[in-house]
Length: 94
Image (cartoon, rainbow, N blue to C red; front, top):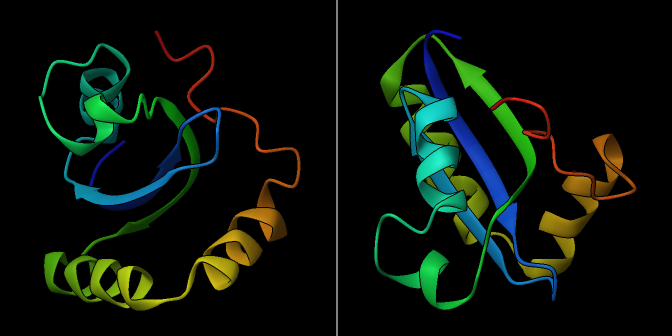
């Protein structure tokens, strides 16, 4: 996959994380393997629930900021609209 990606990941308990990357497969792998210390490692966030792709990095950055500004309920609504079972979209990538 090429371009820029805005994604939402979650822990089993439902803690959400929103990020952006130009290599979603690598970045999700890093989250799953807890290779980067910080929020996602502390809260065991390792399931990819939603992502969007962009050709323009500034559009991706703006979308990431927009989603981060949303209330939790709106973020959950976005995830539910495309992934109502909250399945790990990266299942089978590796």
